[in-house]
Length: 142
Image (cartoon, rainbow, N blue to C red):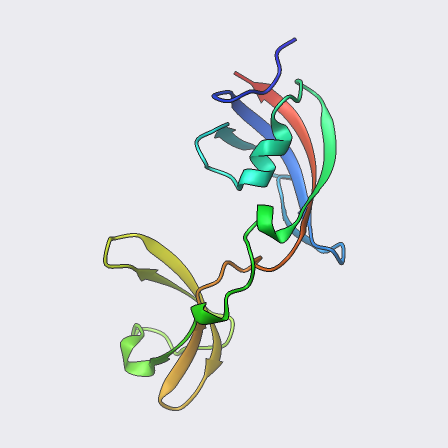
């Protein structure tokens, strides 16, 4: 029976929860996640834990923040003038913006505070600074 290894194309059913048990993402009711091991399409800790698993095998594991999305970085919280934001929608706390860097990459930013002249945005990944728990099942290996 084949095992998951570097270069394997896999499909995985999963549920990810936070320390408090809240589900932050799941494939339940959706298609399994599909990726090639080694292509850095998923976080490193997730990829490391699937290596060596067999078809149909299930596993529970916990990733510390260093193997997930890293520490929360306060330097990634910025204050920007409101007139630099898209004019098509009124900014609200919790709203997500898609920002482009000078090299063309797109980043998500969450609005955390709205003032009269400025808006605070957070460029950290929403799960930064948190440990993550996963329950996974390998449903296909190619």
